[in-house]
Length: 151
Image (cartoon, rainbow, N blue to C red; front, side, top):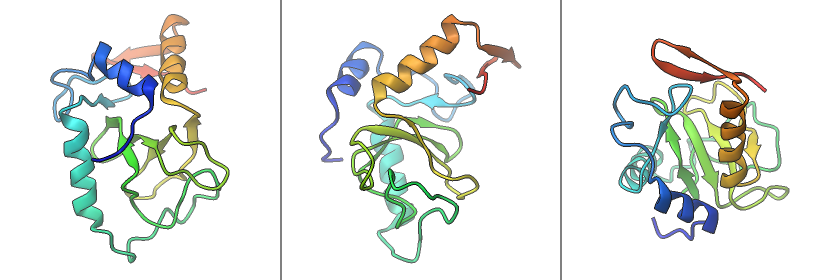
């Protein structure tokens, strides 16, 4: 991918490296999100690159209004997929908009169904938010899966 990844993310991958049997399987991290590993992150990134193909005709999300995220195109090669839920998922933004922060996390909807919004300013903040919800019992278990409560 030729991207310089933030230290917090690299250290996290050294500790857990995503989830085994998560991507393209029924085992998920939360809210049907597969936590990608060092093996699957580049595969998903390459797939997004192929789908986008650098074509200008694939514009950004028409309902996104934030200046924190660049929204000129459907996909940005400096977005690193962290989770996957059938083409949607959290991405780490290494090329933010003019008011954003490199390394911020946002949710990518492949069909533009919802606006792109920054979920956390860093990977560690994002992961910490998930941990806090789990520790505070702000989740439910349905059909064998963890579903986090809304903010």
